[in-house]
Image 1 (cartoon, rainbow, N blue to C red):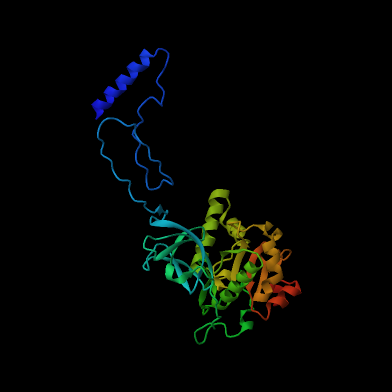
Image 2: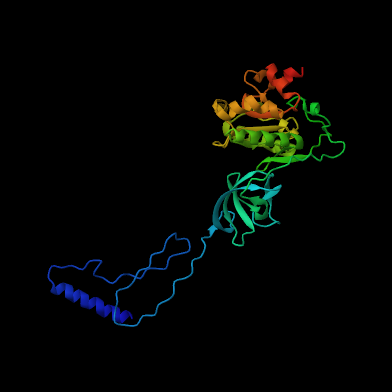
Length: 347
């Protein structure tokens, strides 16, 4: 075949020379062989070679294969786009397997942005905390389910026995008691709060969404061990990067980060909330419609703005328009309406 093609090419070249000024163009030449399109191509174009007096074997075009995408987590899935809802409490996993690590949870009625599905259709790939994760397909539906509120099943002798038990101070001077133990529940994504606070925080986020406000949780419950590592890491960073002494670094960190055991996050009662367009806390959050909504509605769900402006000398922390603390449904409005920070309100 190669020899036959060379003969044809030579004949065409001689014909071009005989014609004088005419030069060979791309249209005069035999087309180059085109490699078959890959599976990732959106479209394929069939090219037909010029008819020649010989017999050429043809191969049937391959059947269409669904496009398969590989996620950074290294599993393949077929693109599939939809907004779906959890029909039950649903673990979100790192990979499409019940043995895979749980990275968070969807509660009944929670919305999920579906971006793909596994070839067998047993798992959906969803956007979760900014990356892809997997949710079992059986518990996701295109129709939002009607959710009946269930009573919390807390253990006998639980630390919080009544609503007013949530009204207490945790700060740099008042640490959590040694017997402090709580049940936690997911709020949004992988973030958890104490079970009762979590229930009301979910209700608050859902109510905001109905009003066209998207609230994003950035931080919630932290273990004391996590808090210690966070505090120590920031102290070390200031000493290395800013040349501070140990005492200077501890002081500088302490106006932003509570010591281990002295954080409301360790209590599971504090949540940092901002707008969906940001990935970190920032003081200008106070100028957003999300902040306005929270200030006007957070007390309806038992939360207060914990570190208000002008109270820095009392709370020991900078103004944090993103930090909300659960104090109970009965107390929240009274605390906020007083204009006092929690230390002042409780004397």
